Amino acid sequence: MVYILAMTSDELKKWREVNGYSQARLAKVLAVAVMTVSRWERGVRAIPPFLRLALRCLELEGGDTKIMGRGRKKTTETRKGG
Image (tube, rainbow, N blue to C red; front, side):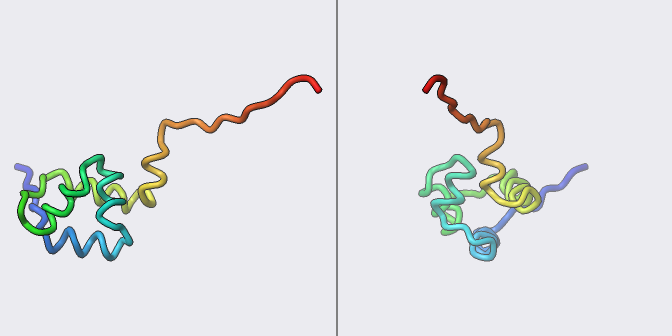
């Protein structure tokens, strides 16, 4: 059996503050509305079970910049002629 410990609203808020995320930044990296993060933190909306794992992934991968940038290639434009 696998048990997933549900995250509480207080735990989410503490995680966000300790890791330096605003509600807007966390919402962006999770691809949810800012209001959703606010509702999770206020206990108005249930926190999905996957959230604890997603936040752990952010910690392990070194932050949202690295995760959000995956799959994007930097391109440089070169000009011919002169």
